[in-house]
Image (cartoon, rainbow, N blue to C red; front, side, top):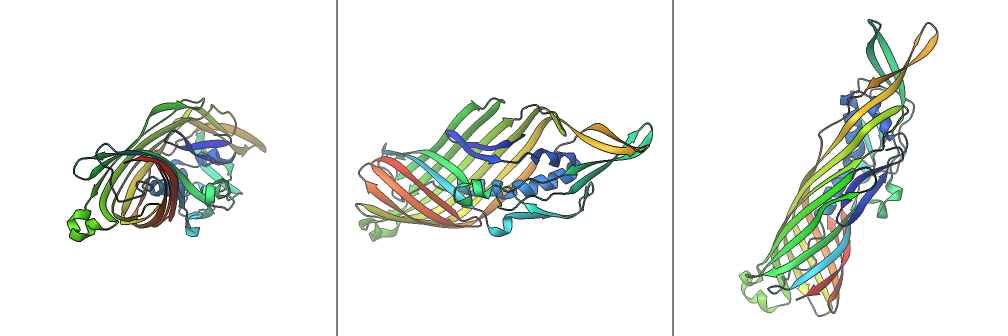
Length: 347
C-alpha cells in the first residue's frame, strides 16, 4: 500500500495494477463515514469501467460453431471513463476540513487535493481533546492506463452444442499471486443461440442472428505489507468481488475473409470492496505549549458497493486468416468500450 495498490486481478494474469501514490492510505485517517465517501468517489469510475469491460468481448460473430467445433479467444477490453467522472465531489464531511472536497478519481488525469486537515475528539486523561492530522488525496492514474481507459483482459473458450447453440467459458481457478497472500479466481459462463432460421429466407444469406446471455463472477484479495508510520497496518487486506451480466441480440454478415458484426442489449453489474486487518493512525495535539503525538485505532471502510448498468450497442469487424481470426469492436454505453483480440477457431 506504500506505493502500489493491486486492485484487480483477472484471467491468467494481473490485469489492472493501479499506482495509488504514497498518500493513498492517509484517507483512512478520517472517520469511517468520511473515509468511505472519499474512497467510493476515488474508486467508483475504475470499478464501473471494469464492470463494463468484463461484459464485453463475448463474441465476434453471430454464427455458432458446429457441434464440438470450438474457438479459443484472447483479447482486451478498454472502458473509457467520461470526462465528468475524472473528478469527484463529496460534501457533508464531518471529520475533514473543508467539508466539501473536489479531487481526482483513480481513473482521472488530475492531481489529488492537498492541504486538508482531519480532526477528531478523543478522551485523554479524562478530558476531551481534539487531535488532528494532515491529509492529502492521491492523484489519478489515467496517464498510466492503456488508451487512458480501464482495461479488462479476456481469455475465453467457446464450443458448439446441438440445436444451434454455443457455450462460452471464462475460467480462472483460485491462484496465489504476489508476496502478500493475494488470491484471485473467476468464473464466466455464457450461452449463444442462433435464431437465423426463425426468419425464413434469411438462412440462405450470409446474415446470422443470435441471442446471447453471459454472467461473470470474480473475487480478488490482496494483502498489504505491514506498515509503520503515519498509518500503521497489521495484516491489511483489500477484498474485491464482482458480479456482472449482459444480454444481447447480435447479428453478423459472414464473408470468406471478413465479417461485420454488431449487437444491442443490456449490461449490468455490481462490485464490492472491503478493507480488512488492523489499522491505526498518528495524530497530534498541543498541550502546555508542546506538540504531543498519539496513535489511535482506525475504523476502515467495509462493504463499499459500486454499480453500473445500461443499454449497449456494438459494431465490429473480424478478419479471417484460416483458423486464426483478428477482431475489433466498439461499444456505445455509459463508458464507451473498445475491444480487440485474436482467436483460434475450428468449426
